[in-house]
Figure 1 (spheres, one colour):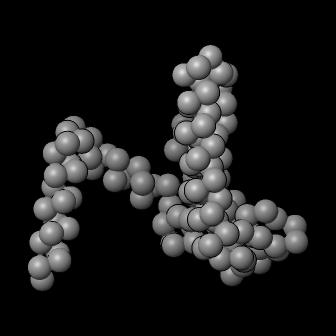
Figure 2 (cartoon, rainbow, N blue to C red):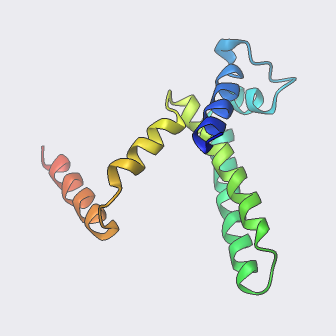
Length: 122
C-alpha cells in the first residue's frame, strides 16, 4: 500500500464529512471544523504548525523526535481539511511537488518572485 493510497483514503473520508455530503458536526470532528468555516480549520493549521516547530526545537535539545512525526501528522491532517474545503486534494499537492522535482529551490523561489511581479504589472 502506498502513501498516496493512505492520503487518498483520508481525503475521501474528509470529503464525506463535508456538510454538503451529510457530515454531522455533532458526530464528526472534521464536519464540525468544516461547518464552522475557514477560521476554525485555519486556526488549527496555525496551532499545528507551531506545535511542529516546538517539537523540532525540543528534539534539538534531547527531546523525543517521534513527537515531530505526531505533530506533522496533525498539520497534514488539518491542511487536508483546508484542501477539501477549497475543492483541492492531496494529489494537487503531489502534482505540484512533482512539477518542482529537479528544480533548485532557490531558482523556484526566484521564478515565483518574477511571476508575481509580472502579474502585478498587468
